Image 1 (cartoon, rainbow, N blue to C red):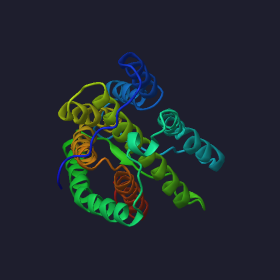
Image 2 (cartoon, rainbow, N blue to C red):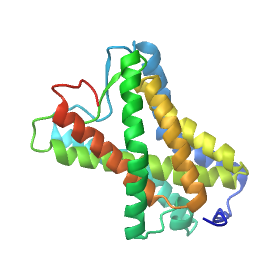
Image 3 (cartoon, rainbow, N blue to C red):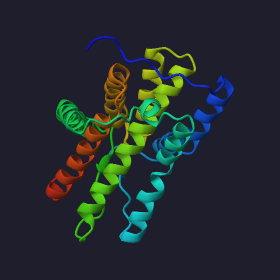
Length: 246
């Protein structure tokens, strides 16, 4: 693939960068990681159901949850825009055809392995049953599934990969350190699912952060994540009478 793209420079001093990263993560996925750990400690794993999409039957609440769940994405875009380099800092340069193809390839590479790991983990009693879809039987079930998947894809890939990896590199952390930090954060906020969710997302996080470091492109990751979440939800909706989880 050739030389890795250079990490964008920044005019911000290290203290400002550190404070910015802490604030962004505290308002988003670091908080989710803490609550996921608490969830893991407070309840058993085997035979317990976890939900990755809000289960309210109010479509207004579903929309509100999705809308405000995107606030951290808006925040990091705003911060990057103030430096005049949204595309460079967050990896959001667009090439629609290649982004779709590469995202599809990442989805194909990760999907089957992730599903297999989940099923094994549930059977071993080290993962909760995960319901990856909103309540079924409503006119809005599928649209909300797609919108919730898009929110998760944008939030996780732009904040945990594009933003966090870039900022950690600007703070002087090496490629491996930035990759490990991103992957561990992703795995941690999936601990509410159990240890299978942690391991599966740790692997996913290593692959996705590694891809970003080699290409500095985030959109293929967003596409792959969207396809993974929509696919999981669609399969659960289709086979929910036979499968308690995925």
